[in-house]
Image (cartoon, rainbow over all chains, first blue to last red; front, side):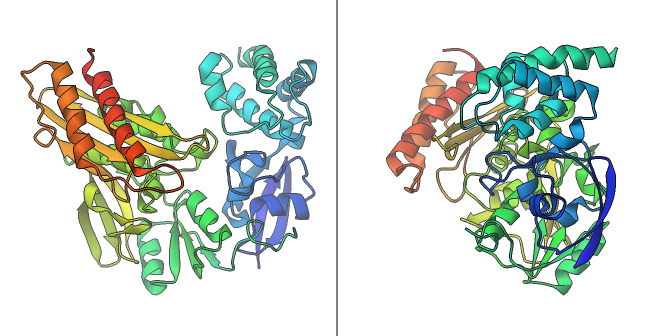
Length: 158
Length: 288
C-alpha cells in the first residue's frame, strides 16, 4: 500500500492504492467516477479513456501509481468547461449514440482533439478518434457532432 | 465474473519509478531476473493481466527525461527509446530523415494508445508484429544498450532472436536508437492486417538516392524480420524501375519462409510479402 496524490476533475485527493492496482479500478471503485467505462480490459475498445495531464490514456492499461501527482479529467470534469458542454450538447443534438456506453470516452477524446486543432476535418478527424469503439455503430453521427462543435472551440481560440 | 479474476487485476509486484538511467540500471541489476522494465507499459500490463509473466518488480522509465529526446549528433540521429509514437509522427526531423519510421509509428496501436506507446517498448518485446523493428532495420540503425556495467551497440537486425526472445540481457535497457543522418532519404512502411488488425505482413523500405543505397525489411511473417539490400534484391540502378521492382519482389518471394499461425497461413504471407514489396517500392520510386 502506498498513498498517491491525484487531482480528479479539479479536486485534489490522497488515496491509498496497491502497486498493482489499475487506474480504472481506483477511479470507478474508490472514487465513484463511473463515466469511465470498463469493457475490454485490454486497451482495445478505449471506453476507459481519461485525460491524464491533458493527454488521453486508456485507464485500464495504466497503473494507479503511474498517475501519482498527475491530474485526471473525465467526462464529469468536462462539464464545467463551456466548450465541452457545447460539445456534449452537440452529441445529443446529432443523436450521436444509441446505447450511450461509449459516449463519455468519445466526449473526452474529441474534446482533446478539438482543443488541440479545431480546424480538423475528414480523414484526419476520423483517424484521431479511432482509439474508441462504438459497438452500436453511430460513428457517422459522432463525426457530425464533433464537426458541429468545432465552432465553439474556434471561438475560444480567437 | 468477479473483480478478482484475471484481466481485472494484476499479479502482485513492487513498482519503482527511477528519475535517471543510472538509478534504473542499478535497480535492474539488484533485482536481476525478477524485474521487468516498463516503457509505455501496454504490452507489459497486457502480459501481466493474461498471467503470462509475474515480475516481482516493475521499473517504470516514464520519469527519465533523457530517454525522451531526439538529438542530432555526429553519430547520426539519436532517438531516445522512450520517444512515443505520436512524437515520432509529429517530429519534422523524423518525417524528413526517417520516413519509414514516421509511417510505421502511425500503425503502432490506435490513436489513443500512440500517446503511450514508445519506440523502445515496441521493439524490445520481441513480438513478430512489431512495427518499429522493420522500419529501424531498413534504416540500418544501431541500438545503444546500457547496463550498470557499461554500454554496447547492437545492430537493430540482431535484436530479436525469436518470438518474445531478444538478445537483451536481463539487466540491459535500450537507451537510444541511432540512425545514420543522410540527405535525400525516402522511405515508406506498409502494413497488411486481418479483420482484428493483427499484422499478416509488413514491409519497410528506405532509399538513399544519392548514395544509391536501398534497404528493405519484411516483418510480421516470421519471428524475426527479413532484411534485404541492393545486392540481395539484385537492384540495378541503371535499369528500368518496373523491371527492378518485378525482380526484387520475386527475390523476396523466394527468400522468405513465413510461419503459419491463427492469423494467416505461410503461403498467404509469402504472397503478401511479394505484393507489399512491389507496392512499397512503387511508392518510393514512382512509376508503374
